[in-house]
Image: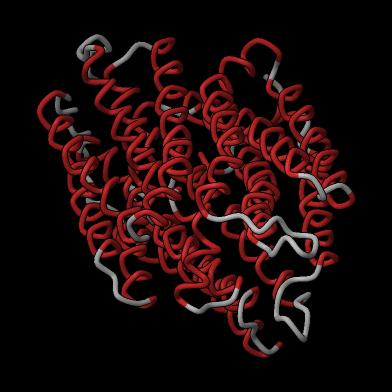
Amino acid sequence: MASPVRVGRWSIGALGVLALALGTLQSVVEPALPQLQRELGVSPAEGALIGNTLLITGAVVAPVAGKLGDRYGGKRVLIRLMAVVSAGGLLAALAPNLPVLLLGQVLQGVMVGALPLSFILVRKHLAAGASRLAIGLVMALFTGGGMVGTLIAGPLAEGLSWHWMFALPTLVIVATTVVVARLMPSDPPVRSEHRIDWPGAALLSGTLLVFMLGLVRVTGAGLPPLGAGAVAVAVAVLATGWVVVERRAASPMVDLRMLAEPAMWHACVLTLVITASFGMVTFLLPQLFALPADGYGFGLGTTDIGLLLLPGAVAGAVSDSVGGITAGRFGLRAVLVVGALVTTATTIALAALHTAAWQLVLAKVLTAIAAGVCNTALLTRAATAVGTEDTGIATGLLVVTRVIGLALGVQVGGAILDSGADPVTGLPTESAFATGFAVAGLFAALSLLVIRFTKKGTQA
């Protein structure tokens, strides 16, 4: 293992700025989604697909990227992924229509793999205590990119065009990647007598891809019962095949014994339900802000929506940076319980109280704090509960789970709004929003049950 004193502040700083730029590129869609829906002529459910296309790619790439980083070196794989992300950002910046924009989002989705690769570099080059702080810093800056993206999306989309929302962060990513390549020391690859488990990688990727596409189809345009059943069977067959291959592989893509550890599977389940609730809130609030003000909406443009979402982005960045520290001081279980209670109470209250802008702003702040602290606490614990050689794949699985949870929440929110649209105006009714917030509260309440039944695995 590399000595944990080989990198300086400039190297970690460059890695953090790259995370900031990636977070910015990922987040510009959120405040501008209503404008994109209008200009591209798509429904809320189809609009949700713009953001979820990126998440679909991320779910497939993250575990593979983590494993490749563990084997061949985090820096080497990170630089190559950033080339793909840059190509996707430029393609989205030049997109003339929805299909090309979606293709750009597919390529941008590779950015999700940057997080486990960053954690590999941090674990290999820093001592244990410093690595926890650095993981929190990278997560905070990635989330902080959401703050930057929220701020710049409106002025760029309204002052120039929505194409610039993608162009500007992409240029920063290109420049920062060059800096990381020059400053960050190369981490030595892990020697192994065995080859990469490509069959396991293919089956895991296939399982995630079919699941995510099925999720989008079922919650979006909808599938008949037979089609939904076929998707479920395909996912089950692929997942079973993956387990069989991993059990027989000399050097499996994912060590199933690691995945069976309480620290890992409890973290995965809790991350899923926590982020699903937060994903619904994240999707529903901009939609409500953008609705005409002559009803129950606010009639706001992209810039104003971004400004109202900004406090939540700031809160999310701060909470991401202290999640691991908070869990270390008060205990993981206490952090998770408080976070789940805050989210449940906030979303249930939001179902009844959503007539003033401050109510929505406060709700975004509270849910962002709860989700940020809980997710980072779970991620930090998983990263430090496994061996250094498994950091990439362990954190990759948690990142994938987070992505799936967000995608689930966004797509369910879009489906609820579509199903509750007024037949005359085509706009979502107020009751549809109330239902969406209530369902988000049910997801959050479900996390309390998970915490209750996984008591042993959520102890500090």
